[in-house]
Amino acid sequence: MRYIYLLIFIIIIKISGGQTETAIKPEIIPVVDSSSYIKILSEYMDTTFFNRYEDEIIKYEQADSAQGVPKEKVLFVGSSSFRKWYNIETDLLPFPVLNRGFGGSTMPELDYYFFRMVKPYKPSAIVIYEGDNDVLAPFLTPEVILKSFSIFVSLTKQYLPGTKIFFVSIKPSPARLKYLRKMQTTNLLIKNYCNKSENLFYIDITKPMFDKKSRIREDIFRNDRLHMNEKGYKIWADIIKKELLENL
Image (cartoon, rainbow, N blue to C red; front, top):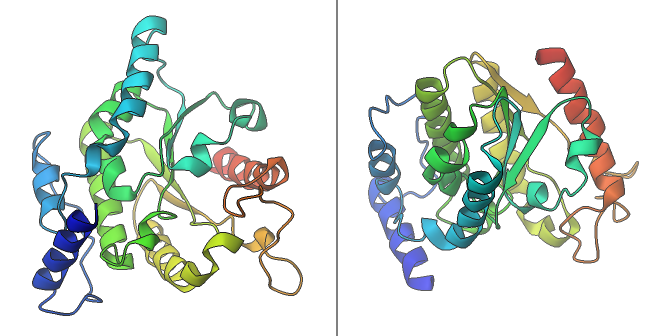
């Protein structure tokens, strides 16, 4: 894995002319077939590690094969902050919710699984939580994360036209306090991008996760200080439900 990360870092440096903080334009990219977006991602990173959560994806597909593919629900996709939201269906009533969070995924990996974890469900709306794990990798700069998000938007526009996308901001957590600045930069880039685009909505869940002294609250997290407990998810549920009610 270190070798893969090194390769990706070298590729990023090469693209940016030696500057890792280069601005990467997030314009909508025309995606003409199922392989072209992988080619686009490969311009920024080695894509060979994208299948590290294949076993989880297969389990979802097996369940869909046995029970039928659930369609026209509000699809929640992203990393473990969604995957571990065990009460999401009841927390977000009356919206019909389908949770397809997987592993400790990143935004590029969500792009990679678009045709298996997004398109088949023909969702009425898509809610994304990614970026929490992306910020751990130096090669996934805020600009590259934004670029990956723009690719997801492009895929959605082409294969699920008219579908609204909601991006849940990267959460602050005590375990990842040192990445807070990078998280905030990424959030701002994606917020500005959403504000300028049709059918894109940015959901800010960060403010109530701080106390009155501007410290990240400890009481809304599990023992790992990274994943939220039921109190934390209650905060998310109230904010996300409000956004869905206003925009769907």
